[in-house]
Amino acid sequence: MNQVITHPPGSLELISGDFKGKDILSLDQFSAADLYRVFALAREMKELVLASQPSQLLAGQLVALLFYEPSSRTFGSFAAAVKRLGGQTLDIQNPEVVSSVWKGESFEDTISVFGAYTQAIVLRHPLPGAAQRAAEVANVPVINAGDGNNEHPTQTLLDLFTIYEQFGRLDHLKGLLAGDPLNSRTLHSLIRGLALFEGNTVYLLSPEALRLTRDDLLALRSRGIEIVEIHSEREIPTDCHFWYWTRIQKERLSSLDEYQQLAAASFQVTPALLAERANREMILMDPLPRVGTIDPAVDSDERAVYLRSQIRNGLYTRMALLALILGKA
Ligand code: NCD
Image (tube, rainbow, N blue to C red):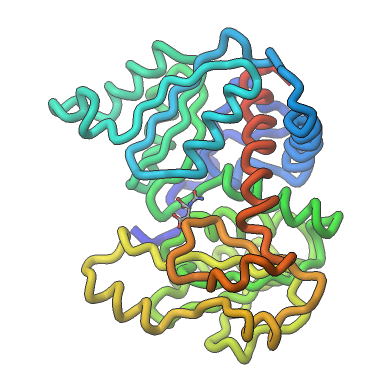
């Protein structure tokens, strides 16, 4: 279950410059040019939002937000993105309680039903591969909003956009990725995204038990990105461009005991750590929720972008992606 590479090679449709009607399941569908296309449009969306300009780009479009796992930012930003562009959403959170899933309806039937009402389905699900299964069944595009410990491609769009806006490039960067590389889908997609650009290096800092599996480490390294596993805060290079902190994915562990042991061995960002190991130009990111990752005393530091641009960029990049997939941009 912890394997990053859940899809057989070649089973994903590449975007190749044409987003219209495509499912968005994995970062592996994107080229660097595809990412830049999203970012260019995200900048336009940002201007639109900052000017409070009404848009009817998605007028007449209905998007299902089908969330089998709790979510604040991803759900909220997709809903805001559709509505900001004049579209509507059909919101189903916890379908296992509030829909016919409760009566025993199969996942496939639920997907077919909501696909019949809407122009796209945004799906969050606890099982790796669920989005790909949904895409096989649905007759509308499916956007993976997080499938178990596998991938979270739209999170990576906003993360890379945030880094790009800060440094003006996505190549020859150094990043620290901390927390839970084994189970964090945001990290799995982010490493794939960074591997699309030349000369990137990431340092992975986590308790021993939460390292990437050997197979995944080798598979990701073979894409050309340099991945260095480090074991303590003292090994954090002081010239990193970004730090990206993730929480321990409690819900993917087998027991509360295991979680408590790992939490005790995990690393936290404090003002002292920033003062010791960070430089003035870097940015500090977190996909949130923040659970044991970053001391709130750090929030007022201007390098802390997790409650600021990183959040807002989720809205702009999702507006851009939806417009592209629905053939409106
Ligand atoms: C992440 C997720 O759900 O994978 N949250 C998010 O979408 N912003 C990270 C997490 O839950 O830890």
